[in-house]
Amino acid sequence: MKNEIKRTNTYNKSLFVVGIAKTVAHEDDTRIDEESDEYAGSNNLGIGILELGLTIKPEQIVEMEAHVDDIDFNATAKEEKATRHDVMAHVHVFGEQCPLAAPIIHLGATSCYVGDNTDLLVLRQGFDILLPKLAGVIQRLAKFAYENRNLPTLGFTHLQPAQLTTVGKRATLWLQDLLMDERAIHRARNDLKFRGVKGTTGTQASFFQLFNGDAKKVKQLDALVTKMAGFEKHYTVTGQTYSRKVDIECLNVLSSLGATVHKICTDIRLLANMKEIEEPFESTQIGSSAMPYKRNPMRSERCCSVARHLMILVNNTLHTAATQWMERTLDDSANRRLVLAEAYLSADSILITLENITEGLVVYPKVIARHVAQELPFMSAENIIMAMVKAGGDRQVCHEKIRVLSQEAGAQVKQHGLDNDLVDRIRKDPYFAPILSQLDTLLDPSTFVGRAPEQVVEFLEEEVYPVLKNYKGLETGKVELNI
Image (cartoon, rainbow, N blue to C red):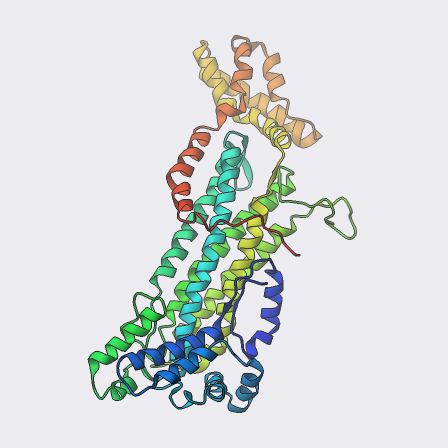
């Protein structure tokens, strides 16, 4: 099955939903069905009204409960085509299934009672699906960082060799961004409140009338329905809809996750180009139809592609919130049905793919060591100068000697395509005779990585592992991609 969030109505025929659903194809059978949740919401409202003393018969509630999962989507689609109203189409079809309850179905409610409350349920459930997968990526990268905490590699600024770092330390930079995303998504999830029962313009006028002006019972109904939906709080004031800024907050954190994944996978693609690190590559996988030797980082490329789409979706919610008139306008509806589903499906897709990538990253230490050896002689200049000064040399004279030798070695590399021979030139220069016995130690890559190995351990123990404890029992197994 596909782990997907979508409306089960005419919009699920869209090319987008079909395309994204195929992209995220995997074995997880978790599925959020918004239309089923809409039925549950209507049922909860009826139960709440019954408990507060209105004339709804218990057998009407029993009848609705018995048929809540008997959703006739074909009949609903025909009815929606006739009525041009999704909620009323369900009301009519459900009424035919529940003749005793038909007179009280949707009593006192608006379409937004059904739709908006369901959307809030779905948004929260969507976060509940995504968070364990995000934790799965964090767990895999934490293992990778620890295993490679001591492996020196070139650090790059401006994509030019700078100082050394370690492979594991670089992975902690990815992890730090993912932890920020985990906190942001968790916060957005917990900040969600229920719309509750608010009526046509948010004044609760219809319920106030139903309860004969008993404001206490209206408030009790709002709280009861909120509790039955599994929420602790509801929005105190709304228009007809909950504020569309809520959608902004939800998609902000998902778009930010998209930026994180794009950066990680871009780094992996660059490292694959240097043949230092590769994503998993199956024995039967074909990299190119024309070039049989190719090992393209297609998983990382897919993540970047989908992440770019995810990153821009928040712009839709900004425009939607900005253009809602007064208590609401309906131009939000079609846009939200597309954008909210796309955002969660896209986030799901990139997390699943990144789980697969991070559980099988391949590191090539000898290639990394070769690249380090090409640049380390230049980086070691300061250490050599310090050693010469300690041996009685003049700092300025030593600096000039190394500058000249470095320029000569650089010309060998850039103009003649040869290896960096700076160390050989230093060994052959009589000036450096006092420190020849120290050169190997001075050029040991592990002495150039500073506290990187310790930083990895500290970061994992202080920040990563405590977060992962919150997901104990929710760990994801080995991830297989269908395409």
